[in-house]
Length: 504
Image (cartoon, rainbow, N blue to C red; front, side, top):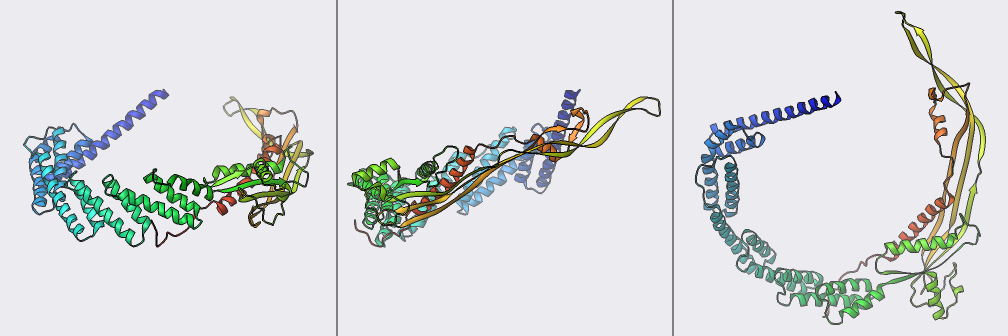
C-alpha cells in the first residue's frame, strides 16, 4: 500500500510538471503570435523556438515557426548588413553569428525551407575587414608611441583573425619599447617584467631575455651588497627562472640563501620545580614541540638546530655549555647560530581532588496502569502518573593542571632578547555522576522517567580525562604561541624599495 502511494504521488508531480511546461509553452507561443502581428518576425521566431524547447512536439507551433522563418531570417540578415555597410564590422560579425545559430535551430525543426548565405565565407570577409580596422588603429597608436593602446588594438585584431599580418611582432616590439622606457627612467623591475612580456609574445625577441635576466641579477647584487640577502635571493631566483645558466648565478644564489638563513638553536628548557606531569620531562617536550612546529611552518630561510647539534658546534668553538643560561644577556661569539631559544618553568602543579561520594536525591515520574469499565461496559485501562523521589550516590572528582614559566629568544651576537614570552596554562577536567539509585518502592524501570538533571547524572562520564592528554593540549598551545611569535618576529618577507640607479 505504501509503495502504491509513492507511485501515485510521483505520477501526480510528473503530470503537474508536464502541465506547467505546456502552459509555459503556450504563453511563449502567444508572445510569438503577437510579435508576428506587429511584423517583428525574428522576435516571433525566437518565441516559437523557446516554446518548442518546452514542448518539442507541438505541430501547431512548428507550423507557425515555418511561416515566419524566412521573413525572420531576412530581418536579421538586413540588420547584419546594415552594421556591415555602416562600418561597424564587429557588430556585423556578431549579428551574422547569431543568424547562423538561428538557422541551426530552424534546421532542428525542419523549418529551413530556403537558401541561406555562405556563413563561412561571410565570417571570413567580415573578420578580415574588422581585423584590418583594428590593425590600422593599432598602427596609428604605434606611430604615436602609445604602445599600451597599440598592444590592445593589435590583440583585438588577432581576436578577429589569427594570425594577422605582423601583429605579434608589433606587440613584442611595443612591449620592448615600453621596457626600454621603463629602464631609462629607473623602473628596473617593471622593465624586466615588460621585457619578459615581449619574449612571451615572440620567443627570444631581440635581446629581451638577456635584458630581463641582467636586471634581475643586478637587483640581486644591489640587495646583497646592502645586506638584504633574502631579497637578493628572491631576485636571483627570478633571474634563474629566465636563464639558469647566467654567469655566476648559481654561486650567488647559494651565497644569498646561506646569508639569508637564520639559524635558531633550541638550547634548553629548565624545570627547577622538579615537578612533572604524567611522567613527562616537561621542559624537553615543550622545547621539542616548539622546534617541530616552527620548522613545519617556517620559510626556507629558517633553520632549527637541536640541543645536540648546538653542543657540538659549541665544543668545536671551545664554548662552554654553561654560557647558555636562561639569564644570558651578554653576546656569545658562536658562529653558525643566530638566535638561542631558552626556557624555564617556575610553576608545575597537578591537583587531583580525589573521588568524593555524597548522598543525593532527585525526582522521577512513575506511570502505572489502572483497569476500569467504560459507560458501555467495556473493560479498558488508563495510565496514571505519580511523582516520587529517588535517593542515590553522587560521585564527584576533578583534576587541575597548571604550567607556568617563560621562554626567551636571544640574539647570540648581541645578547639582546628578541622575544620574551610568558607562559601560564591552566586546564583540567571534572566528573559528576550518580549511581546506586533507590526508588520509592519496587518499580518497573520501563515505567520510570527521571527529571532532566538526574538523567544527566545517570548518563555522565565516570572517568576523568587522562592527565597526559590534558598536558599534551597545554604543550600544544604553548608551542603554537611561541612558534607563531618567532615567525612574526624573524620570518617576514623584506620590505625594501628598489634602487633608483642600478649598475649592470
